[in-house]
Image (tube, rainbow, N blue to C red; front, side, top):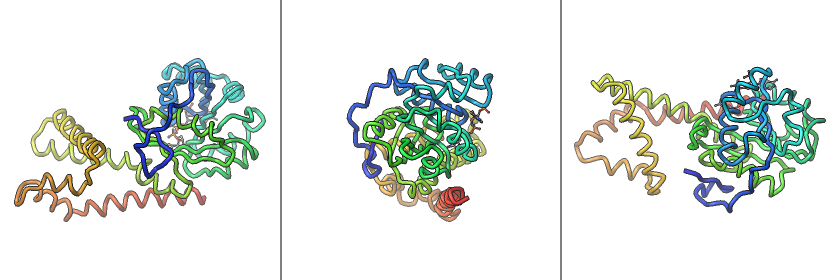
Length: 289
Ligand SMILES: NC(=O)c1ccc[n+]([C@@H]2O[C@H](COP(=O)([O-])OP(=O)(O)OC[C@H]3O[C@@H](n4cnc5c(N)ncnc54)[C@H](OP(=O)(O)O)[C@@H]3O)[C@@H](O)[C@H]2O)c1
């Protein structure tokens, strides 16, 4: 899948061919659990390894991450951002504003600063960097590392149309990239950012039960994972409503309706809703902190 769109209500709408990224200079400051997959995504989109500079917390860590990614280690933040068109900030949220204040005098004025941090607003970023610096918040989930993730993009006031197209081009290989507002980010975290972890937990539960029912674990893994992928692909590719797809598997008095009734009695809907609402609520609290 390779959808990128500006309109969340129409996630399959194609964007026009994006800009050429082969000479774009990108710095990633903090290529950890999330910054690393984002670096991989921009390389897949066409940024060259020699133009992708990595700065982690130490020279050793920067070199290790750059080697693993096929990118270039920078010896300092200043070296990473010198001449950069785009700077991705992948440090922990509590570090972001101090880092931006430090970078303020070093950043090229046209460089687009993309923060991955939960809870750090566009206004806070603009205040730390100085007005006029183009800033973007990107909220990805980890399946971007296999090109099947989702990233929500929030655009600061100084981001021009070309820069907006550039940011979408950088995430063209992430899976699905959608523009969202900062108000929507809390719901987005429930519905995408944290949702992959909920799905992993449900997959784990289904696999354990398949083993309890007598299947070997490798067979259980394969059956459950392919069925989850197949169910999502069927909905995506046919546009079928999930309730219609579910009813299509449910013969009167058959196995599936028995299982579905047990699922409802166990409260699966309220459990899923509670998990998503709790993630969204925590996101609101982190923004208010
Ligand atoms: N993990 C997720 O699923 C997820 C999802 C969406 C958004 N995010 C956001 O992504 C950001 C990073 O989270 P994470 O889970 O990726 O954390 P992480 O794995 O701990 O990565 C943080 C990275 O920042 C580097 N770093 C720390 N101090 C630094 C400094 N002074 N200068 C340069 N680099 C420094 C670390 O370098 P070392 O490796 O050398 O320690 C590490 O590579 C957070 O803001 C989080 O809100 C994460």
